[in-house]
Image 1 (tube, rainbow, N blue to C red):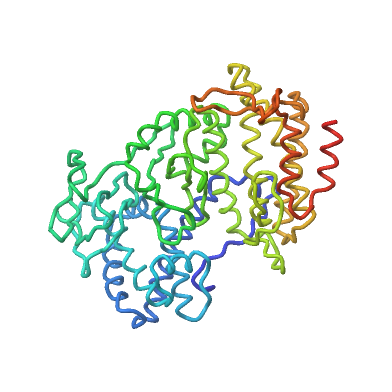
Image 2 (cartoon, rainbow, N blue to C red):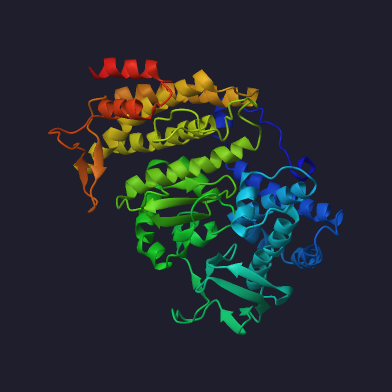
Amino acid sequence: MRQLETDSPQSEANPAKLLWPGTEVYQHRFEKSGVALIAVRRALSANADLVPEIKEFFSLYEWVSRVDAEVFTRVWSDPVAFFWVRRAVHFIAACRGEPMGTVEKAYCAQLGIENAKDALRIHLGDFKRFVLALALLAGKDVVFDEAFEVPLPLSIPGTKFVLVGDKCATIRGVCEGAIETVGPRRLLHVDAPFDPRAGVRVESCPVLTVGDAQIYLNPATFNLRGIGFPVEWTELPLEFQSRHAQAATEALGAIRRFQPATFIHFASALHTIGLKPRDDELFNVSASELPGAFVCSVPPSDPYVLAGSFIHEFYHNTLFCIEEAGQFFETTKDDQIEGENHYSPWVETLRPLHGVLHAVYVFLPVFHFWSAVARDGTIDDGRLAYTRESIARIPVQLRIGINQLRRHAKFSAFGIAIFEEMVREVDAIEAEARALGANLQTPIIGMDASGNYRPFIGEGETRPKTVGEMLLEHLGRCDLNGECAEDKANLMRAVS
């Protein structure tokens, strides 16, 4: 597997540049996936009899190599391209005897297979989704040797088009600008009028354009084998995305107004958002295997709250990109990447140290967003109350997260540079929060079903719960291993 992956040297920039890189970090990850596709082709050439599907993959690869470079870049910039090529790399490695990773195991479990060759055979067939997209964009016909059996919904990479309708479709190729399905034969035109009775059909997802950013609201992007979280919500009609498109547009506008540096990164690297209804099973999520994409639950109806969620999820993407330059943690008996062993002030369950590090990182820019909103001075009282709570709460959570990492994490040299810069940021954030008058007596503010801000009053209580009380309750309920006794004592003194 090692020889198929491309490694980049750790940056020699100062720690602040390591923590908040320029937009080139996203371009590097795209270029890496392009190099990996070439590496996959070479690796399969050396093992051409590994599975029968390699022959058709070679044919399609050659077809792709003749497509205009600009069209290829558009398609291969889609988050699914990175996901596909990573799986290909890892399945080839597994065929050579290396152990499969978590995503590959989940991929196989979903298909009910255990053999790496069977997984590779099926996965090579999925390369046809990119050929399909390239044929549509380039205006070229293509016929697959073996029909493409695909579960729906299917996002067509690099486009706004989504194949929806039945549970699955059998695709023969592209003919005269239309997707040709069989069983029975039909030509699905991308510009055909909407007809919900048509069975398998092509629909267009909403595309948000704010400044230089163009972002797809496309849940089908996440309908991938082994992705690691529930995907049933991706089958919702695209009307759900359209219903919340205005709120998402306003959220992007708020980021552009209050955090323009972050918005530049959005315009450079954010490709797809999947909006989903709120539920207890899945809230918001970013996956390292889908750079430039994340899932976000709606409502909130307030675009500022949604903007905070967008910033949070996007910077998970950024930290995943930074991590391409080197591992943050040393290898230890305590699985720092996936072992859910440690208290986190943001969730109800124990988390791996890698997750705590991610939480600290993403809440740094979230704090700065709310700080900018507060300093603007133009928001109404309800939004101001919510803003003040965020400014009071986030620095304390950040400090607990930093303390947890300092207590338990075994960092690499690269990780130490990243971590120490985070510590400096948290010190500055605490000072800014004090300057803005934040304190632990600030009431907790929530939103009701109508989108109105309300102080949170617990059952049987008569006054709003404060930030300090909420944090103490969380520690008492969720610090299962008693790791944060010192943090708890400090909080109790401050609250009293």
